[in-house]
Image 1 (cartoon, rainbow, N blue to C red):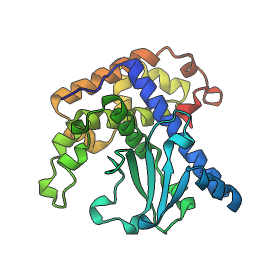
Image 2 (image 1 turned 120 degrees about the vertical axis):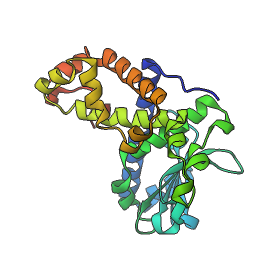
Image 3 (image 1 turned 90 degrees about the horizontal axis):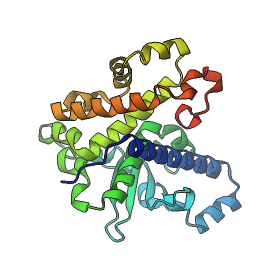
Image 4 (image 1 turned 120 degrees about the horizontal axis):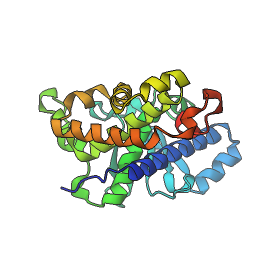
Length: 259
């Protein structure tokens, strides 16, 4: 099995790409919600968005709205149109074109894109976008879809949570999701609080761990836990002298993390 490359620079670039794509997606949804009927029609003609009648929602082509031109599809669906085992967001590939997609049930009412704009969670979208980005760099179909292999079963007893959370793809996605939440919280602390947080690698890691998915932390193996600590230790060394962390909250420049 291939392993996810884990390094400070790789982690930083992947999270930055996922966050940029997330912001571009949300800006486009906001634009479409406020656009005139003519502008909405033009967006559909440009293959940026279209209705998805089977799921009473929308389909958005990521390469047409994101500067990264990342190939992929975002499918926003009506929750009531999804079967019970498909209520949670997930990724996959279209059977005919093999194009990667994110399916996100986020609307209580059919075709309510305004509701979607409030329901889409940043941490969930970052998680799923990381899966899309990993799929591009790994290019190994047998390596993908840990959820379908381990937990997408109707009976709780059949779900293998330890294998799911310790799969290298899920470990990477949950790490990026948790790292984003921790950094976002970090940039909202006071200078005095940051002095305590950065007192040592141990205090920094203890601060960050609070923002990671609790099920993820619970099911990590000893080896995976050690890997997580190493990644957070490298993150600590990378950012502890970051000038932006020496500024007050009002002057923070790193709005990508802070927003």
